[in-house]
Amino acid sequence: MKKIYIITTYTGTVLSYLIRNISKTPYAHVSIALNQELNPMYSFGRLNPKTPIFAGFVEENINEGLYAIRTNTMCRVYSLEVTELQYERLYENIMVVSNSRKSYDYDIMALIYLSINKPREADYKYVCSHFVADMLKKSGLNIFDKEPCAIRPNDFYDLAHLTLEYEGLLSKYNALEHSYIPIVAEI
Image 1 (cartoon, one colour):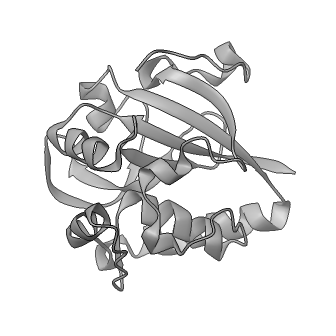
Image 2: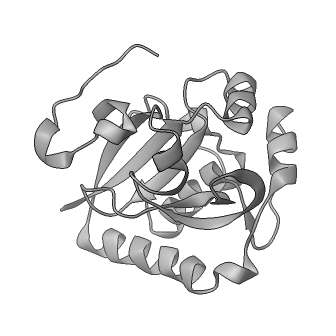
Image 3: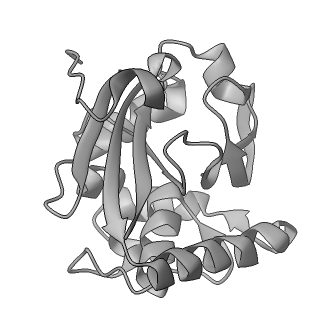
């Protein structure tokens, strides 16, 4: 068995504030990582850390890009045990998107649709939660009872299939220090 990691974050940007208020949950963004160090985290989000105007497939790192600017980013890091085959499929599915990232766009309209509880699926378009849920489903990890395009960031919050490994400042996350002891911080 292997572990993968799902990371929910709240950066405090205007867009994350709006998403958080619409979804009524502390976290507004979701990423997926294939290692305990969370390097890299894969998602759909801003390509330029200083503006949300240009967005798409991103490889995020804890101390780079938006997270280097927003050092007060709060997070929850969850783990999920997977088989070797599921892990390999997940890696391959993420690499399909990564290798053709210019063909994919951030689905800004999906944010509007999700705010009125109407899922939207468009070819080669994702928001963060749809991307993570779709990668999981395509890899044989069916942890939701609805389609990936209907998944919101708050659907990952306290999901029974996930184990909470860490909660606190993303900038303070260090796999060696916390050794899988959850750190809980007030939000």
